[in-house]
Image 1 (tube, rainbow, N blue to C red):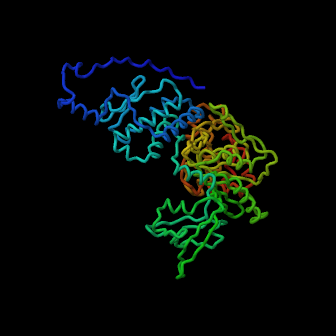
Image 2: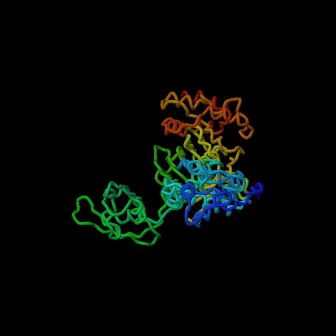
Image 3: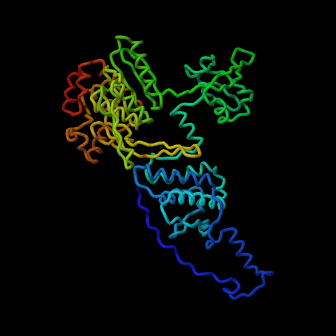
Length: 545
């Protein structure tokens, strides 16, 4: 439980006397001197700093900021305070309009406009997230009254700006997504109700760019290049891109009617399609000789199942000629932790996959391969690069630590943290970093990443470079760093990553080394156990054959 920060005692105020006696200028209220009128005008323009602000804050914003602060304080891996989050978020207003600034004065929050005190709000005397959430909403209301620039920013975008600024003080992976963006991200993770087409929109012309297999659109015979002229009788020329997407999507089992003009036909075609749950595919399969190449572009709700299905297809299509697997995780930014565990479990015969540690007790978790899980046993190579992060690092590290696969490429990104995603009351999403990842061998992935068994960094895409890699030149693990990675200090990790720096290109040398390795079972077995450089250098003779 967080400690409540002590608040300073409120400043004492002198009771003001009536203006006519205080200034020594008796006057009739029926006839006010010009300087009184000028003072009134100044108060209208700049606000009177000695009067508390009593404007109306948006109740929806009050609720949003309250739940944001409450969840950040409870779940974030670093301790946070409601007042610190509030001030960090509100400070971002100056980036939108430099004329706006905020100043904390003991138990008050002063909003300045062009440097002059314009609004005064009472700062809470406790750390209660609800009170600071209400203060944030009130400060935004005051800023909108003062600044036309801030008033012109849509409310959901301004909320996102403020919450993201607060989270940025804690780490760079936590963020808030306003409802429109959050719905798109949920669709990518969990799927959406749709018909299975992507659109090519050019001005008022809307065409089908692609049709996903095994979807209502493919079953109905829609084709890339078909021009959509109407949706449910509404001309597409009258709809924005967002409205087109919303019209095509909807709950599963509901219908949408598309009016199509197809090349070679003069009469419009009408298709009434029943929407279904569509989860974007993140896995592709290609047979290259006697090797199955499986590329993962992310980890959503169906990644492990899709990978399992494609592995089965590889065995069916390639039969006894299938000799090895390449799992390509290059430029894979990650995704769902649960899917990373399931993907790794497809290739592991029991044991650890990953552990998580964090400040919140619920963040301390241990993930094992499920008992009785079917396991793929073919020789295996994993490709990684500087774009491999998060869930892809979990898979690569688990397979490397277990000795199940040879990891080839360059050092991974090093994003070894877990984010919990919390849906907010306005249908947005809070993504909060709440745990760190620990590999089966016990080292932290964060900042360290996965160092490949065979490093291809800074090498050309040619046969000579392939031979250099296979003989361990340069070795990803120099002799002075051959100890267990859990024993390395930060200086040791820095040296290790310096020996194999992260690169983001999709290099053909990676695939060449993988193919060469899987073509030679004896060489593959030798490399598989190579964590120490002395064993890697023993490959020199075979690599030169």
